[in-house]
Image 1 (cartoon, rainbow, N blue to C red):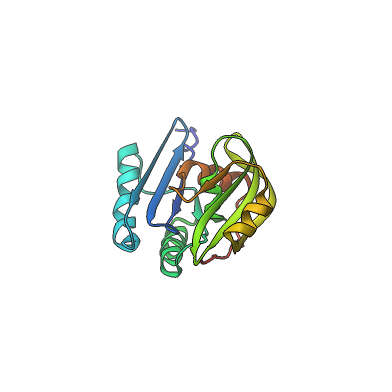
Image 2 (tube, helix red, strand yellow):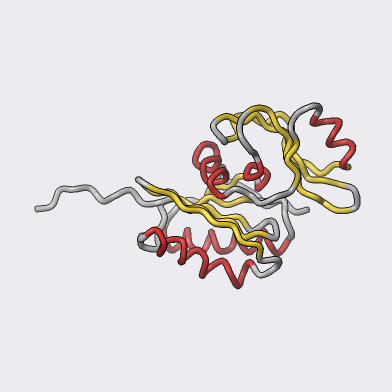
Length: 187
């Protein structure tokens, strides 16, 4: 009789709020992540890239938890990721935890501002305290402001504008404090 318990399943993170498709996978003993600029082709690229990530890791296509970047982003972009995550969650009977895409833009530790271009002189930004690469407290929650107003609000802290969301940062944020009652944010 085999009494060994099954191995813990991996956690998958995905973000489709920016022109990049960002994925991360963590399991006991390893992790993988990838980001690819896909423009508006998230729906066409996401299923194959997600399956490929599991295949590269040598794992069956199933996760215990799914973390989703909830935006801000384009209306279609964030909905593609959310729909895909919710579909997988239903099949896998896994929870979906949401975190703002902005948390994937943090770098290093300490207080920092992060923002994405919201067009017409505006940004969608937030100010966070970060430790171990994970947001530990929200100083100013994500909001849309003029670029000048956001700079004044953020003050003299490092400011990371745009860029590629880090899948592992999103994944760890989701495990640390992701919400199951998330909503999407649009630019």
